[in-house]
Image (cartoon, helix red, strand yellow):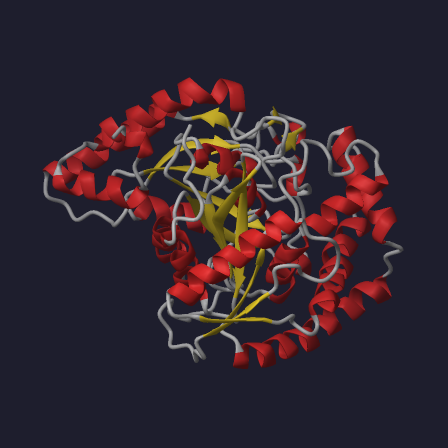
Length: 464
């Protein structure tokens, strides 16, 4: 099997045993980028020379018997709003095309320290404020399953790079599904970790670290399978002095477990495609076969939680609307303006009430989690949208449809709970994923449940 088809874990093992050198692994992935990226536009910045030089250094370190990390010899890709020394953190907008950081973001630093090799940078929509990856600076990224449909966003470039073998593992971030939206659209896996699990600290920033980004946004790993997502999470987790939100809770901390999972195949708050609901039901059967007790039950405050995310996150965006217009594309601004108008009016009082509601809602979710270990839903309630069908075309109906489709991802952000996306089916040739939300710090339990679904083989892996 070609090296670009291998998992990150397999590549690390092949490097450790001498079956493949780091230079060979990196070279084959660079060739793969050459082969498929021109049609897809997932990778938007190449650092080939740096990647090959780093690979050669790691090969030499291995030859000298130096201790190496768990990802030694494994290339990884990085979204363009995660700082990588010497490469622009451009957020997909022209005004930041020359914004070169002099320090790595902590998660990038930790991947490097584990022996992983930065390979390339991946596309995102303007400032990450869209569920469809179309960048003012770099253009749109195409979905390899069907180019007429969206890749999801905002880590859409990363999702496509992983799905097509340009990279085995990568980094993204998430304030409104940005790690998980591309996972369902591209047929890969990801986790939005518990708030405080993974540090987030940019040198290149688009403004002050407002409270919404502090408490709703999270960095996380993406990969083609759950084992690699878990491996990445273990590498990048832990307290970091540049992020005071991080908490010293070990990944393997004991969790109270009931053995029961709540299933919402048709989450409240909007319609669900029956074919998507069937994928969720198939995933619940996979959990049952693994010995998990599943019950069809709704979280009592689910719709209130969706509103809370809107009050806080969209409310924060609304507050800075006038500052966005000069720096983002017309279609991106149209989408945001329609969203603000559709779900507004937004006031300081509404925003403050949202934060008050957040506390009460998390208490109620915690009470729910006393009885259930996790909640299984679709990641999106519809198939991947048509590219641009998010309101950027000026359609209020499309904007509302977009927000309703993505609604299962919002609780993970506003509550700060772990949320794992895993492929679970194929409908009309398009991937469909499911989402597992659990209580704070239950990241590994959520990944374990996702692995049961993955192991059932109900979703074919990407084959491009």
